[in-house]
Image 1: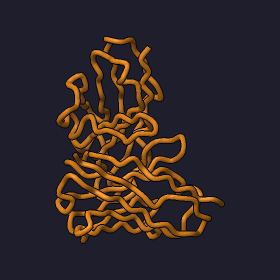
Image 2: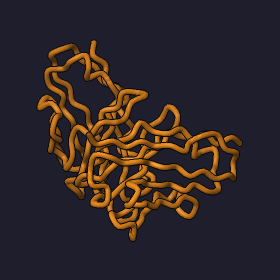
Image 3: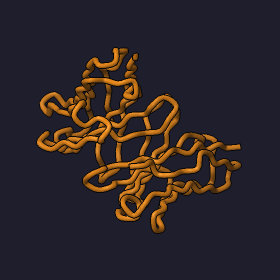
Image 4: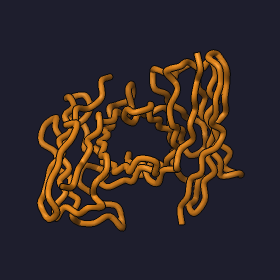
Length: 111
Length: 117
């Protein structure tokens, strides 16, 4: 099972919005509304930002939102802030053979 | 506060074994599926294994099937990963995490496993 495809890097200025794509297949992203997104500052524990495609855990800013169209999921960060600079990973449930597949990761830079 | 603390990582020769532990606190550990996820050096996250709340069901990534064993002790609020026949490609930071509706939260800080060839 190949990793889900994410852009290697995206950047934006403070206050802007940016979107990270996560492209899978009809066996994972396209088949289940079970995409989650994680923020990872190197050396720290990853943090859940979105689950079940578009749900935010308690305590996560509403500047983060998730969506899906076909085999591609997306994470949008609005009102970009300096502390949003981190690596972001998507993950999808992929059925009872593969179980879970992560994305390749995207480095977000705040200019 | 929910917390997961991994331990047991270290340097091991190829073919050797290690057992990782993950101590959970701040939530009813016995109610949740638990997972191990690893991050290869300079690379992305990879799902490794999961176990159901009572320990009766386990699943593994193909890359570790037959070599790794996940288990748990609900009386001790502890998750384990027994890793045998270790290979250089198993070198990674290993994280334990809780399943929340097929999302993972929280995560521990991770424990580094280095396999020398």
